[in-house]
Length: 337
Ligand code: NAD
Ligand code: WQD
Image (cartoon, rainbow, N blue to C red):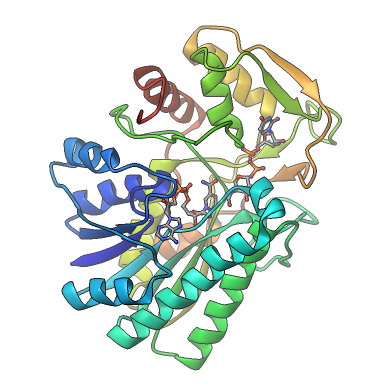
């Protein structure tokens, strides 16, 4: 069964392609390579024994997208393609609305024309804004604190309206918490361009000697050790969540919303200490002021996904950190040039 995977050479998309192949699906990858590299396809093949079909192009290019649906019989779409740097979205909001919102609308229009009615969308815990309490359930109020988050919220709302008007469609909105980790093979992982925005890639680059020191944004939050608390989830667990959504929801009409998290909150210092243990070296850090827009605590109530999808995160903090370290130490410069 062909599954169109937009953004399939990216961090989460590449891990999902491996799980898809291992479950007997045929991923058809579309990516414009604005934030990923072609060598990822070699790595997917090395791990899974199958090279996914890859068509380089932009989801905002209608003629290109139509040609993909004309050439391949697509059963469902998993839509990862998008931009994700929060800070950049504040500087360049239109770039984010164009890529994330307009790109998704074009994709759905092309799907409609091709009579493909099953979509899984990469949403984010960012749609909960600053939550009134934790753990966060799917029915909590949503809001946005930056253009990236607003682009995800807008897409969620557009898709909900569209599904309401087209009740035979199945649309699944997966709200990821904090994806981390890498494939256990050490062949695939996260390879951010420039200075990493996210915590674990930054820590990994300090550990491998690419950066001198981690700045910890705030140690005066109302949390057990004063640093921010998040729900870090292993990227392979996240990929498996997509498989579960595909199997259980892809042919169930409706708009379905799931949190994909572990339900466990970990602080910045928890992550630093775990990395020091695994990499057997100190991670120098200094406390810095809070980062604008950060919340004190954000972690999921993942029980709805377990009840409906039969999916639950299996990999704990040690696996997340060990797999990140294997990837980073085997590939100090990521996928290279
Ligand atoms: P990523 O940047 O590694 O992957 C996204 C991929 O999409 C890249 O390969 C990029 O080249 C491609 N892409 C971007 N715009 C495109 C376009 N217009 N046409 C074709 N390809 C395009 O990011 P990721 O971490 O794998 O995230 C995947 C999705 O999950 C994104 O939509 C992101 O917003 C969402 N998400 C990510 C996180 C996270 O922390 N990583 C958390 C929540 C949600
Ligand atoms: C985690 C914790 C920081 C970097 C972001 C997006 C969110 C989602 C996931 C896409 C926080 C602290 C970080 C550093 C630090 N992405 N930190 N020093 O902010 O929870 O979520 O990625 O949808 O939308 O906002 O993740 O990894 O940036 O930060 O102290 O150099 O680490 O303050 O407490 P965040 P993160």
